[in-house]
Length: 422
Ligand SMILES: [Zn+2]
Image (cartoon, rainbow, N blue to C red; front, side, top):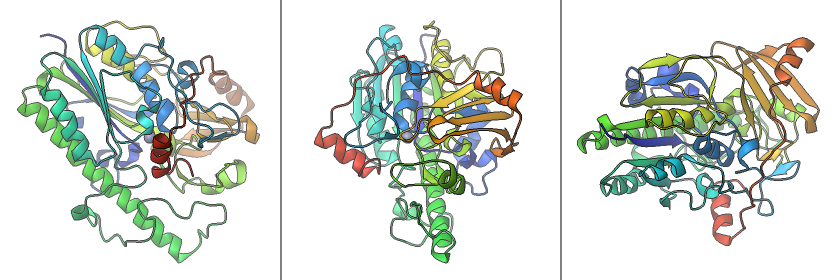
């Protein structure tokens, strides 16, 4: 058999705990659930960051953000704004698209969230940004796949679960009635003064979370369609499929702590992503299946940087030594890192075994948490030796800083639409 195709699907903002097979109360992901039996899947996979730009560059480069220079906003406190746009990945940092491309793969990135391509201009043979629903994005990708007559690498980035939620009208009430409240597709009750004791808040939160789950259900159906499309084109047996997310999403779980312990230049607390590195922001699903990939569950802590060496190994190729470890190799516990936020003082975290250190020097914050069976923080551990042991693994200062993206009206308009800037 020749080189396998590689299809990498990233579902923006998909929390690991929203996969119904991992215990979510609503049946959000029947197709993904059905895939797990024949896939390698990681139940404690962490994003390298909590927002799109640095996370997707780490996926593509196998390097942590402080080593790839893509997506960091220079200066502290950080505040992604029209005066402070992300940076691009220097061209001498090899990406999956470069290495696979050099081996004769055709490469394409088809995305639905503007941020996903911002740090990677021109780094794929074909790049399309469509701010559309998953079925439309998939249709465009299918057209490109059909036109290939050799091996290909397709990166599909779906944006339906990202603000503003993209939910098909016929599915709006799929998980019970969702009232059409103002801002239900965006965010509300985000400011420090929001009345989160009110009835109105309880009603809003229920509707917002329910609708997010519907968005995930719709994306799951599109991924099933992608699977069928590969099957009917006779490509499924020759294609490695990687399914993951760039980061999670917060639904007010840490609002109180964030208000008390952290500063956000936007005065936004407890929602969304890009502002902190709690487990709700960093835990993502990570599923790989295809030729030569053994079906198994990996419970060790792993990272999005592991996708790079995994894909290269699945394609029968060697790559540069990076920060990741191939998931096809021996299972080994190691510290996994997250860093590079978009709002507030720079935060860094390290997860090792059932412990997590979260550090934000600008906020005067450093805390060690235990992680429970659901991999969420459960209680603070006050043990200086443990803090010191974890602190040693924290990422260092940035050794690479890319060039800042120029603020064109087009870019600003898209970032405003996604709620990133005012
Ligand atoms: Zn994202």
